[in-house]
Structure formats: structure tokens, C-alpha cells
Length: 159
Image (cartoon, rainbow, N blue to C red):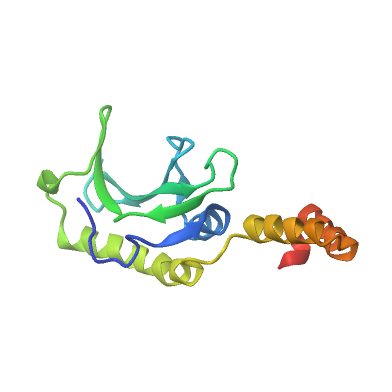
């Protein structure tokens, strides 16, 4: 089931802070990512016996590669799915999701929407550093080149 009007659809976020945000809120980076797509999954236990639900946040790279970790991701509407052993997860409307489980999923998405919105359309660090390097090389500014190299080698200094 597509969870519409959550505020995530269309947000553009750098892969690294997005992954940190998602993982800090209990989402797992899905193993089905490739160079262009990424998924984050959250397992919701159900009150029903032997039933598991998943909230999936999907995105696709509009720049860079997910595999290299330098992608810029455009998020899509999240999905709510029900797992059927051993076949997998079904995301259709016909799965009969209760209002309670839909509300749980929406509340979970609400927790990540606001922080994700803060990252929306920010220029990723690696792009800023690349542009600074190019400018410093063109202008033969050794001081800036050394600072960019230092920042590139020590990401903790950028925080």
C-alpha cells in the first residue's frame, strides 16, 4: 500500500546523511540496492500472530552511484507491506491493513520526514569539495587546496 501525502515524495537528499538518518530511526538499508536505486526497510511487529509488516522507503539516484556512496537520492512515496512466508512481502491495497498498523507506519514516516526535509536540496559535501578543488587549481591557491585535502581526509572535521 502506498503511503501518500507523507512529505517524503520528491525530496532530494544526499545518500550519506539519508542513510544515517534512516538507520538512526531503525530502518535497514535494503540488500536490493544497486547503482541507481535504494530501499530502507523497517519491520513492524503486528498484534496478529505470525504476521509481520514492513515499511519501505524507496529512492533513486539522480546523480552519482549508490554503490560508491556518492549518490544524490530522490525519495518516493513509502510503502506498507505484509510479509507472507516463504513468498515475500506484498504491498497491495488488498492486503487489508488495519487503521492501527497504517497509523503506526505514518507515525514512523513522520519521524524521518522533518529531518529529511532539512537535507532537501542541500549540495552534498563531496560536490562542494570537488568544486572548491577545481577553483583552487584554476586559481593556483595552494592554501585552499591543502585545506580541501585535509577536509577530504578527515570527515570528522567537517561536522
